[in-house]
Amino acid sequence: MGLSFDCSAGVMCLMRWFVQWFVNLLPICQQNQEQSTLGQTMPRVLLTGFGPFGKHEVNPTEVIVESFPSLIPIKNPFGRGSSEMSIEKRVLSVDEHGSRWTANEIASREWDAILHLGLCGECTQPRIELLAEDVLDMRIPDNSG
Image (tube, rainbow, N blue to C red):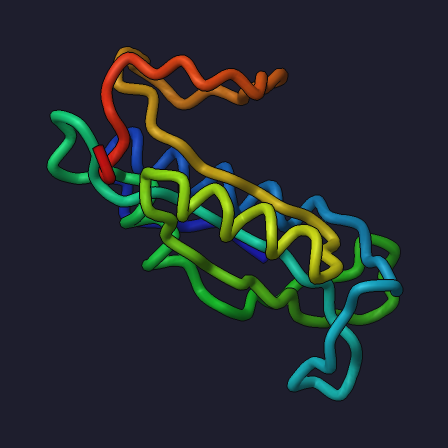
């Protein structure tokens, strides 16, 4: 499947391209798939972003998540036909409720992949976070105060 987006939004376009690239690289798994509209099973992906917070009136991850399709056609890299990928999208609140929702969803359902998008206010380009730490040390209060 070709990757094409209107790139007038710059970084946002690059982030959407990266998400699409990521889901196209997912292996075709069997354990967590749902029934496809094509009559086959399909991989399930959880895609999350966040709403505005702090000084950021718009969070590009919210725009990306909301504009991303819920079903993505995928081609089997081994030439054995094609299927679809189910994308469950959620814009999370920037507070404890948002993180609890995510933890509950991960614990209660099976996923082939989980991709969380976040906004780094100081970054000038998208980056991949390789290590996350569970530390409650925020520069600014969350949206609940």
